[in-house]
Structures are given as C-alpha cells and as structure tokens.
Length: 334
View 1: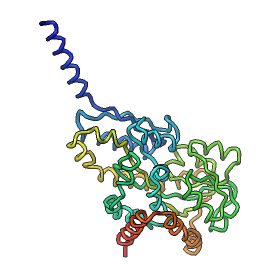
View 2 (view 1 turned 90 degrees about the horizontal axis):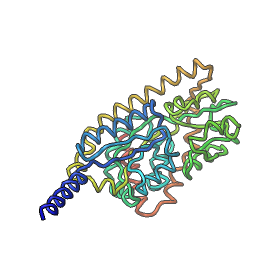
View 3 (view 1 turned 120 degrees about the vertical axis):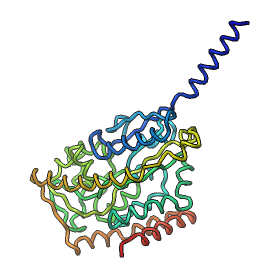
View 4 (view 1 turned 180 degrees about the vertical axis):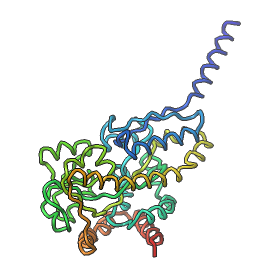
C-alpha cells in the first residue's frame, strides 16, 4: 500500500514537473546569423522569453538551415515549428489579404510606416486573417528599401527594365510588379539566387541591403539603382496553437517592450543601407540616383498595382484595403 502511494506521489511530482517545463519554440528565418535581421530575430525571441519567464525557451534556426521562406512559413502554419521571422511577401503567400501592404511606393518614407504600423495592426480583421490561417502576428518591422541591382546594364528609369530577366520573390504580387515595370520576372527563392546569377538565368534583382551584403549577392552586381520602390517589411509570426498554449498572463505581456526593439532595429537596418553604398563603391559598382522625373516613371508604371489588388479582393478585404489607405494617408507628413 505504501509502495503504491509512493509511486503515485512520484508520478504526480513528475507530471507536475512536466507541466511546468517551458515550451521550446523553434524560430526559423533565412536571415543570416550576423545580419541586422538575424540579430533582430534573436533580440525579439529573447524579449519574449523574458516576458514569459519559465514558460518559453527559443531555439533559433537562422540562415535558412530549415529551408527557404516558403517552406518555413508553411511549417509554422502546420505547427512543425512554433515561430517564423521573415519577409511579408512570404507570409502573404499564406495570408494573401496582407499583400496590400506591398504596393510599390505605398510608404514614402520610414516615418510614415512607423506612424501607420500600430494603427494597421489594430484595423478590424487584420489579426483575424492570421488566426484564420492558424497564425498570430506578433510584430512588423521595416528592414530596408528594395533597390535594383543589375549585372550588365544600368537601370536609370523603368524603360531600362524592358525585357530584362529579373528575379522576383515567389508570389503573384511581386511577379505583377515586375511585369508592370516591363521586365521578365522569374520566381526564384532567395537561397537559390546566387546560382541563378552565376549561370545567367537572371540579370537583376531587388533585395534589402543587409541581405545583399550578408549573402554576397552585391558582388554579382555592377550597377545599383536607388529606386526605393518598395519598403521591405518583415513579420514575426507564431503558430496559433503554440500561442494559445501560453498562459493568459504571458500572452498579455509577451510583446511588452517590443516597439523599442523594433524602432532601434529599423535605424540599424537603414544605416546598413548607407554602409552598403560605401562597400559597393569600394568594389567598383556604379551607384545611380534617379532624378525626380526618372522616379516618376517607376511610380507611374506601378500605379495600377493597387487596383489590381483591390479587384482581386473580397468585399470584406476591400474594407481592410481602404482602411490601410486611410491610415497611410493620415500618417503621411504634410
């Protein structure tokens, strides 16, 4: 009898310890370890660990070791990993309603995006679209401008892209943007872009500065055009079941202090843009700053992308679409 009671006590103690064991969240990202984006992923994970003491431990898998963005965001949705940090374009492949945030020239500057960020996240249905796909959005961050790297010939205005083979991020919207620019888009995961450039499969690409430098893509290009056609936004999302498994108290406070980390990281990413310019000049690349008239050709060519997105949207999605436009309009500097 005593032995049975002792066994029950041992079992209950072991069960209690198992229940108290912290959840181990695997976070996947293609961001290189030593890049500003990789550092941001680590800082965000560390913050979430501190805000959920005893409940949460992160295991970082950076540099694309678990696969490209399409693979890892799908793994997060299925619950095979708990967290994903990466481009909004990759998340939009799973949550297509958020594509509207990737309209060219939607955000004229970083300050407009920062002013609009919280309001966008609070818009009705925004978070609901993530929940519908078994995801929870924990944060958005601007990680730099997409500018045009080209191998053989410079791009001064949109007419220079006509017929050029350009790598596009997989997804219908990015393909449509390059078509609007007159280029021949070829969907290639970022992890395969170096090879595609080496064999001449593509002649141009656009990625944020820190990714170009960390992956040595900048060494493949001889021309760099400051088109600033798209503000690259990254998203930190988690699997909803993993999120729901946290205590209510941890869910409430998990993102406390996140805004300060995000703003500091955005400054770091933007500073890296300037560092890349110096690195490119040292390597002999030609840097081109388009005139106002030349930039206007990019804006004019991409002017129909917003309506392209709106036409594809449902009635409910159009409400979100129009809400975002109003938020951005209100956030623009006078």
